[in-house]
Image (cartoon, rainbow, N blue to C red; front, side):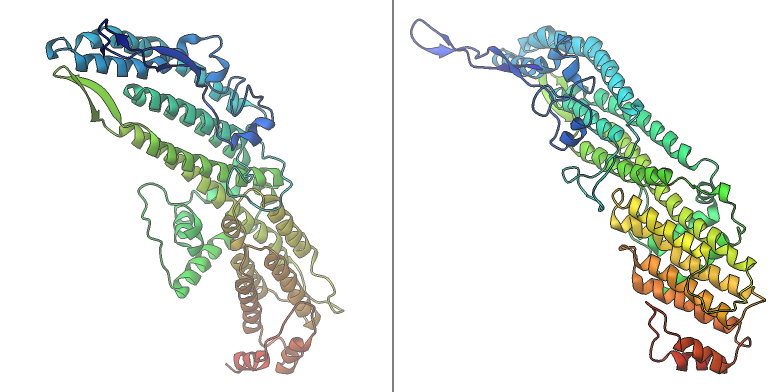
Length: 510
């Protein structure tokens, strides 16, 4: 882009003295540039006209060669400085003349011609960015771990990354023309709202008519999920307290138990009500992280957006603080992005809990009258553990570790409570059947412990609690000696605490 700047020109009198206004023009390359983090994006399909320059419709670089109208933005500040200088040199009663002439012409041109053209051009860029087939397609990733920054490979969806670049460009024009900052902020808000609707459409395509989506909207479940200590990793929306709910261990267990009870009461879970397509789950995880990235970017842009405007008072130009309403509007848009990001995580968490219930509900339909020692867990447990490990591996590059813990961390309590309920309803079981159930519990425990973001000690405690509860519910099925014999069974990967026999004896004595 061509920029206009001031360079010194000195008028020299015949006597050698110098005075007058120093003013001249020169054109320089001031094309809006893209931060270095855009390199990865550009390499995936957006060509470049030079170092760090976007084109092909994304930003002003593509239209400037044909539309010199954008030069008005570069002229504005030099003209403003020039007229201010003229006003300072003239007597007070003539100081307004410069403003009524050149500056008024430039400002009217910007308002009547440049801003409408800019809105149309950038709106086209936004539409192209969010309508591209690759806009909401999670990037193929060779890395197995999540990167927290764009420079290191954070896999933000291409469409949303483009929108952030475009918003930065438009607000860059606001820096050049602070008087029109409010109008340009409104443009950015319009573009972000249009992009948000596209994000929500993508979200709804993944969750429509699915049970997890409907459940997070239920008041009772939404309230319990908010009170759940696991939600501490979720960002806070505007208006919410930044103080985390500090619940005691007893209160935490009560919340988890109540939530598990509500979900388990939904049995039988039907397969068609679950999100069976792993690609949709990966999309939700990638969409959540990308939405959070946009929200963070908007908040940073708000902090750098000019909040002053120029006006003339008593013949002198001054800068006064204007209403921060445009900035507040942008902050509220960021809040909407963040809320949708949280909804994506909530759906994923509930989805994994429902999948666990769906698989384990088969326990109630089985008779555990086995005629030999169990060598493998039940098929439904094998299917569940394979699914957990596969989905964790697929989501790992797209969400931070703490968010993965939130997504998969709800499985443990649901599995424990589902096992307890299923065991309590069993009518046919023998010693080999007990061993089969233990084998199932061990397999599930190993699958959950293998997820790096999940606390392995919590997993073991929960599932051990489920087995102990089974003993409590069925203490008369077997003799004390038979229970002790179960503890002596050597199972790979299973450690029996030294006081296990004493604990079982204490339970049976009550």
